[in-house]
Image (cartoon, rainbow, N blue to C red; front, top):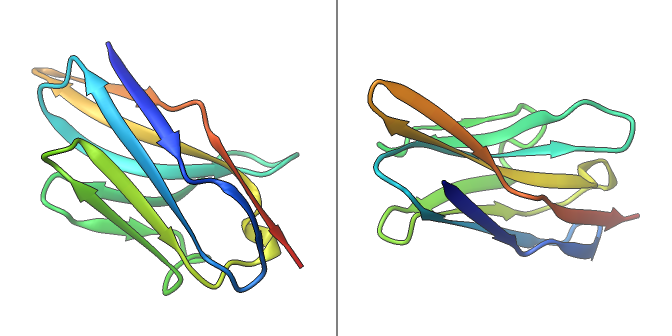
Length: 119
């Protein structure tokens, strides 16, 4: 089993910044992919950003240029630096980790951390 502990959410005014962290622990053999997703009330969960073990990144168009994803492999931790926040960024942000135990990839989700951006 893999446990994910998220932190860093909160309330911020539009234009402000927050930094989310997600630390993975447990039966970690090979983390293939780490990422952040979000879900606003009444909407489906959507991708925010992902980063592979080789640090290749992928961003949703809506956050490009404002959010930066990074990872610390030694700490099994992924970060999301969020700048120029907008009210539409308000959502529950989930960390997702994909662990490879050959030949199968296992996906784990965190409990979510709330980000609220006031106008």
